[in-house]
Image 1 (cartoon, rainbow, N blue to C red):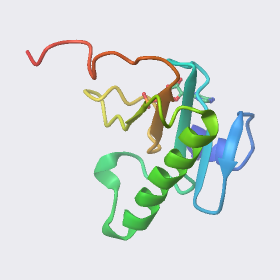
Image 2: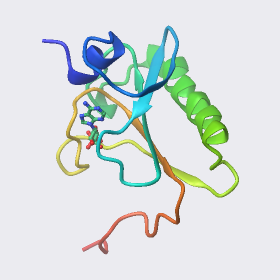
Image 3: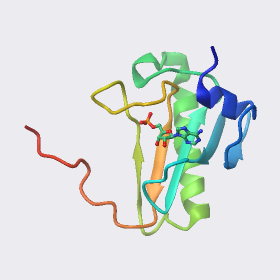
Length: 117
Ligand code: AMP
């Protein structure tokens, strides 16, 4: 079964795609947590951060250069932004197709909501 994000990459289901090349696709989150909330996903389905292989290093780096470019385009590079990858249940991962959240456009507050314990 293709993941939800594979189907977005293949344009089988609609999404507000803001960037796509042969390696990654970026689209606006359907439930934005900030004025700018874009998901940047590898076109190939890596389920979680645990599944990143040595040969994926360039691909993962590309997610970050696309994030940098989108932050510039969205006008948040100077004000600042947050890049997040959630992994598995404690990380709050909902979609098991690796993705980088690009969040910005307002002060984002503390990195996590609660204290360590
Ligand atoms: P995560 O919790 O890191 O797995 O994040 C998954 C994200 O995907 C959430 O922020 C959802 O709002 C977002 N999402 C789920 N379905 C869609 C969709 N069809 N289009 C865009 N974003 C989606």
